[in-house]
Length: 421
Image (tube, rainbow, N blue to C red; front, side, top):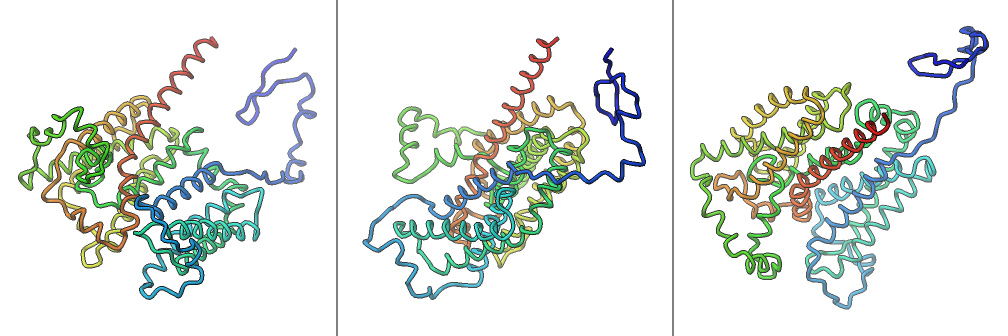
């Protein structure tokens, strides 16, 4: 007769064989040869590589307008003289910008291609991607193809591959990242992890309110450019839509009111982001420590970008009293809300992200903003302004999509469980 036994926390079928024949003796356990290392691949690294390539293409070819064929060969920059106005900052930026490409390439190729072959392919990936971008930029009047950019970008990809070479097997095969991934996050949390990794970079673009994201609707509808087809189309259908700002009573005429609005937006954004991250985590994960690391990373990235963008200003000029108040209140509330059931955290996260989108789109521009959009466009990161801005615009919508998908999966699992009974 077969029964059910338990060993090491797992169920297994019991047999009538003696216990000594079914289990290894203790004296022989340590003498058994070690199990061979399982070679695994990383879906997260491959997805991250694909997204990074798309971001590089977007940042390199923005604004995707004004294409002109001047009769110059797209590869003429290879034999052109060295540019006169290359600074150390520009070259370091190119190297740093392509280092993640080399790192992700080595991780994505594992375990099929490892060692120096993976590094050489990372070098080749940087050379081909940068060469293609420089060649295509020949047809953009706002861009200048440069052989120095090609060399520094390729060097960055090579350095990234070399840095990641000794860690690829340790992180993937030996389970470093995989163990943390399984221990802290749910099985289908890859998209949420990517959102968390991207979230700090959405804060680089100077917002009028700290952590204000999702304002794409207001930006498109108020676009003054004459070729704004969407604006003209919507204006023809709903002319009264463009009078909504004048009818609002939430105009920040005073500094005190503006600080309260910034505190509200900052708190809504941070609590919604933290709850979204907690939905993807397991109950035994160190949620508060992970959320604290996420917030610290976002603030440090924003401070570093501010120093590079505005060298004459302070790194923390954007951290107003309203932003500080919103961060403190939001963090305290988040400590309490992470103890709620998962489904309730997901519902609250969706509510707060929707509120963030509404506030970011209906509030008029703040006259007390710490920096103007014009000074950003004239800054040193002119080629990355639109990329960071679009990440901030789309992030709340992507977060809502993940939460909706997660809620649907939970309902399907519950129905399947009821039918199985």
